[in-house]
Image (cartoon, rainbow, N blue to C red; front, top):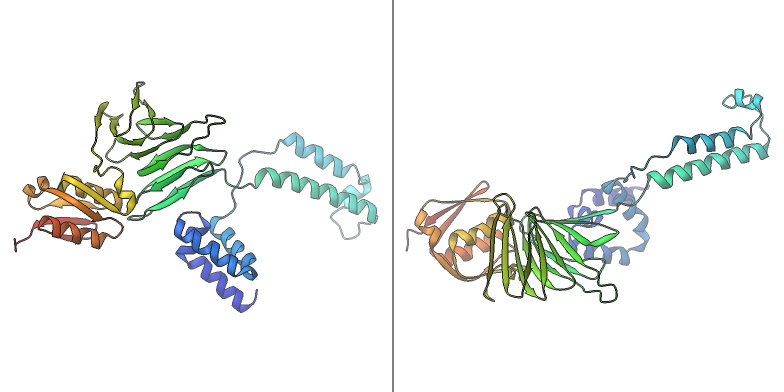
Length: 336
């Protein structure tokens, strides 16, 4: 590897954006590096070598049967004379070119067989967002998922319509009329079952919230009961304390509007507003004046930049927010 390629290779390995592309983590980074590769085809080998270093090699846990290994070894050894068996690893061994070729081919076949079982592409796919990050994902079946900050979805490559969620996501499920294939979202509290629809799921606060925008969904709660939802309805269930809420919500509810880059609140308490910030940015909130918790807020708050988000909340509520380490301290603004 020449000096220029070595420099580029090391740059790939140390670039956080490139690491996101290699791990299929951030839609913006994926789009950027896909375009970069198309415009720099001469570096494609270097790119994928760097990707291999970052992601490592995935091993399939399927073990090769000992009987199969023994069978192939016997096939190799049977082609070698008894004398050659005893001296095969010595410099004085004299093997005919044909026998040498046969032995090499048989051993090569064995390694190919072993390699096909032990080296495989990962079958489990995971998408995870960092604090304050929102990504828009397209699943293999055509469905789309908007994943909020500090959230994660995972699924098996062979069954992308069976999703596990930890955090907050908005699903727009592609229906498949020909097969009537279902789509599932699994959380710690329940399972959402649909054919094709749009809905929001949030697993924060030791419970799961589901809000249905259109279509219909069926919920299988972890206590064994089922619920059918209609558009505009909200269901919240906690497995830990077996509490269930099922109600209608207004069109201005904040449950799913975060995906557009803005929290939209309609007479929501400041305590609830800051819960959204806590979850998306992985920080804690402490009210220095408890009376501020019940203050109502109406309007839109940008949610993809913490500094701008907090500044908007301060102006809307007449408060002062001080960030200390990983905590937000909420004060009443002395100028008001």
